[in-house]
Length: 238
Image (cartoon, rainbow, N blue to C red; front, side, top):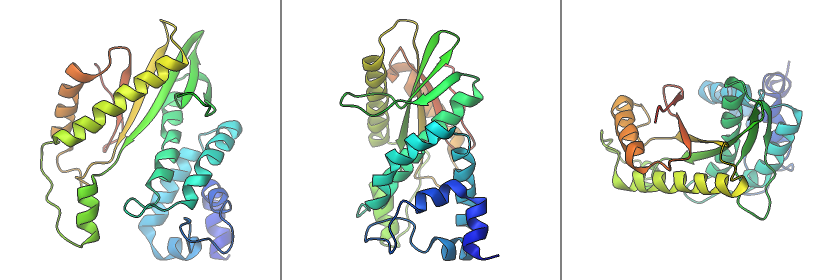
């Protein structure tokens, strides 16, 4: 069996995304040499299998919505952060998967409109559930250091810049959900994916303590927060 047939069978939704890119792929587009790179790099194949597993949770309508949303991001490469925005968009599948695992019904992506909207809507009986997915990515400093092939020093304390970005993300999530639905009994969930500079997660336990402390004083009172970091997500009790 040829590599393209084998990998397409294993990663059907990844290949649906790849098929969105014209052949030959224009400059700045993602998915160059997909078959060859999957055959040559086992870690990449593992990562794509993990993404595929998350995408497979989406029903037909949800997948069609997310695929249309991510398509333009796959065709734009940022000078420093490459296709990070595309993966930020695909991360919305993690929020969908979380709502499925929580047992909610009628889960759907909310169509993008002229107004600010959250990413997802679901129901618990008659109660409306809203979910906004936010991704906090690695710092520009780390990326620039790696680009220069220099050593990046990881510390066990999250810095002020990180918490400023996190606070802004949570406030924006709260505003988006309130603007979409102001009903008092609406449950609002911010699903926050954190890609730390500490890529080996040596200080993950210490970071969690700092994150929980941050929520005590900074979290908007009308939202819940679910962290998605390594190891897998857990729900804050605050």
